[in-house]
Length: 460
Ligand SMILES: [Zn+2]
Image (cartoon, rainbow, N blue to C red):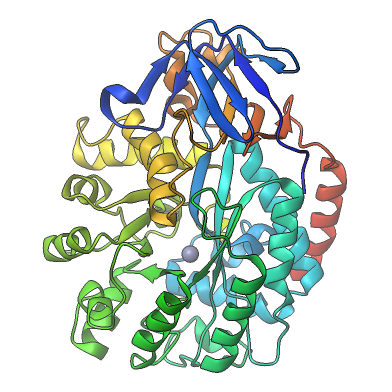
């Protein structure tokens, strides 16, 4: 585990954003006091107390830590694979991740996770939900444990979305290249029970959570097992997550095979509710959006990956207006090339305006999706906003840089200008996870050297 929670005073920042909506989004020029891992006080000109460490934030804007609700950490060793760089989702799956799944050793996964956590932290992420699907019948289940270990080493709040498949979907061009034998239902649920007993914390400020997350409901398991998996998850008090409606191909397949739109399909199999969130939801009818909103199910919006794969632009502003809990995810970086939530938020802010006009979204709304919205879909109610009593997860972006010199409104600079940003401090549950732009105890050169060697083994 990282350093212990400290008594901290974030003093004199340029501006503080709360993660909330509307007028409440901006807290202005206030100090933030942190005690026992929580936000103890927010106010103007707070005086330091004895034993308190003061962080001089004069050149910084303060944000709630980003909550990344959809990631695939193993893909951190698979950025910009040439065979997939100009491909759509189906070809990309067949060319990039799936042929290499069986080649991922636990050591490779550990290196990918370390690289991924470092990139996430240095972009301001404090909570990560990883959709981890490197499971197969004859494989090791230690990879889930390994991700929890590495998350703890980086001090990251971590949600393991335990993926995997229960059938070989030979008619899927991607899956047909997977040289892995699917697990049985007992194997999958048995491992989830084990993970739950070992790691899962139900508390609203949990550092570790387990989620039940078969990779794709339409391909990864026979439909009759979907309700069984959902009931097992609910019986264990665990949330549900999966990929849905990422491409028109996905929607067409669902319609042809099951005679239903994807949202109708999951609704018919007990996969809707406030304890469920879906990655992507790019292709949605107005009726599906209504169904989603009425059920309280959430969305992990991954606009960069959707654009990169040419999948389309999810109707995020329409979903938000309908009351769907919205969050942001960077998705696997093999289809993004960036694990930065600042980059994701910047692109989300822009792409909906390009598609729907200047009123489509605001920086404040985008920050809300990426922070409070993420905490909501993960059920981490003590996380996501800067309010007294909430978990002390916050990030200080340094604006002392030529690219921010001309700003009239520095509060929005990290999202409006996008990368590169510099996270000077990141604090997670009151523990310092990034200090003066560095991750304590992490040798960046060593991380890079290790990654280069392993990328060499994954080429071709
Ligand atoms: Zn994904």
